[in-house]
Amino acid sequence: MGMTSTEKILAAHAGKKVVEPGELIQARVDLVLGNDITAPLAFAEFEKTGAKRVFDRDKIVLVADHFVPNKDIKSAEQAKEMREFARKYDITHYFEVGRSGIEHALLPEKGLVGPGDLVIGADSHTCTYGALGAFSTGVGSTDMAAAMATGQVWLKVPESSKFIYHGSLSPWVSGKDLILFTIGQIGVDGALYQAMEFTGSAIDQLSMDGRFTMANMAVEAGGKNGIFQADHKSLEYFWARSSRPYQVFPSDPDASYSNIFEFDVSRLEPQVAAPHSPDGKKNNVRGVSELSGQTIDQVVIGSCTNGRMEDLRVAASLLRGQKVSPNLRLIILPGTQEIYLQAMREGLVEIFIEAGAVVSTPTCGPCLGGYMGVLARGERAIATTNRNFVGRMGHPESFLYLAGPAVAAATAVKGRIAAPQEVAQG
Image (cartoon, rainbow, N blue to C red; front, side, top):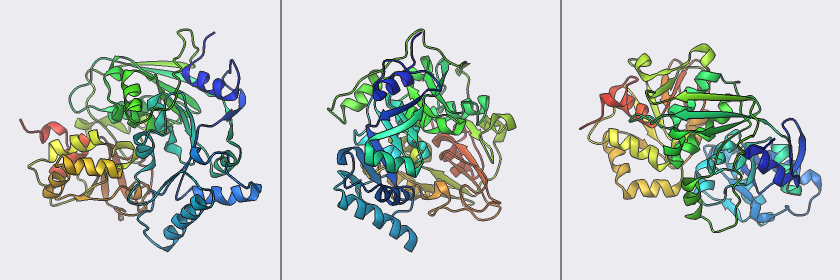
């Protein structure tokens, strides 16, 4: 019996020829990630180990992205802890404000993650890097501390489910729509502790930005990781950013899967997840046409899910020459400083500001209801972020819808949930 790409990566990092689902392994890590919320907890646990140094200063990444620039004294103290730990242990990849970005957009951009890598991060959306053919998953701060000291992580090998997408995507349909549709079909626990392997003709056509979006939200289906087979697109993306060695681990034709799902997405329209979950069991994920007309108070375009160049270009194409509805506010957050700069070079920031949007420095702030877009009681927002449970973006009596950048931009113009075709020109 063959192995899946996830099983092959885990076997290689555990020093074994074969691993099986359910097996407990101790595996070597290629990268350990922490942010300004989770890393300070890990630092405290690391100091308790008595370790005099980290296992490899080049394989630890510290990114302050949730509450920076600091929103208050507590967040300033957390950022300071990261800064001091990085200096004390001479961490190579510490990213300071102004040279940073949202972690899951930043690491691939910097070439820090590649095919065949095993990456853990004290953030649930670390699964993003599966878009490059890596095994990446979120862990707790204690696991992060142990990995910083030993370079090892304890894991249970997950079962794998294969998701095959047939057909070609319609205009305005993106990776965000595919993953929302998928979660709507299988439920928020439909891939519980499983590797979600994405493939098919529609995936072959999907851009890297779209693949990052899909892998990012594997955890919203309960997945342990999301993963794509490394192909010419992912390899070209990696080659443009890194010259280090890598290894591709394709799934074997006779690999075993707990489930195989097949979808014809040729006629899929842009998707929207209604409050307070993208759970299909509650019929919360629907085509935009079914929710069109719902008035909205705030639109957020950005986050580790949809703050990349493709997302900003799509939004700008719909906002060019338009004005944001006077009944709502539009917040746009580029994923990294480099993306921000490229958006400026292409004139996108000018389009956004002329339309009436506010463009922020890269931050996770609104996504977790932290700052830069917190909702008040009764307010409704639509966002390109990844979670919409109760209170996620602010008051527990607020309401959050999830969508891709095309629907979000159209909604910003219309003042209500709207399909991109309602706004598109020409």
